[in-house]
Amino acid sequence: MSTAATAGGPDSHAIAIAAERRWAWVVIAIMALLVVMMIFTGLHWSAMPPSRVETVDVKTLHLKGEFVESNLGTSVGADGKVTVRLIGQQYSFQPQCIVVPAGVPVTFRGTSTDTIHGFVVGRTNANTMLIPGFVSTFTTTFPKAGEQLMPCHEYCGTGHEAMWARVQVMPAAEFMAKAKPGERLSCVSR
Ligand code: CUA
Image 1 (cartoon, rainbow, N blue to C red):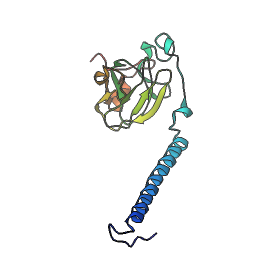
Image 2: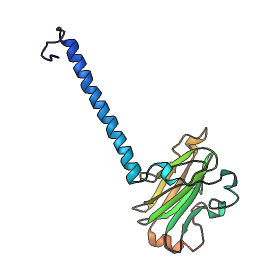
Image 3: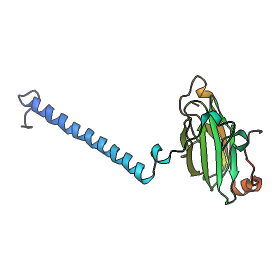
Image 4: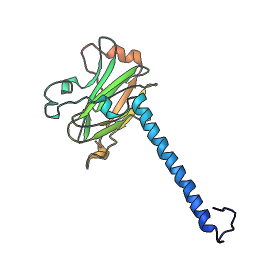
């Protein structure tokens, strides 16, 4: 194939084919890169849901186990680990206001009672889906104190845009002074 022809000349068709072929290779390269990224994050960070499947019975969620109302909120374990347990439901989070310490790893554990919800905390990397029947979990550290909004980011019905909670990031010393063993902290009554 010649690429030396002038526009509109007899070789313009061949030029067009060559250009299209080049773009096809660019698209194939982009797709290959995305597949490699998926495999990398899946294997390296175990980011794919199937590798961390933890299930929970939606029918008994409110009655027994980890996600009963009295167990929701922030707790500090005997080992000092901070865990936030929450549920999403049409159209609110429980608790509606979450307290966490700054500069300390915080593990979130959440699920949904009805449909798929999700949340992101302000401009942090705390971001997950809440899926009925499954426990979503991740650990993150909030670098500085302050209040963040936590909106639902999965369309879950007519009340979706009104579904959000607040996250209060407190200085770690202040938080630890408030936290009592066995208690569940939140800032709901504010
Ligand atoms: Cu819950 Cu959108």
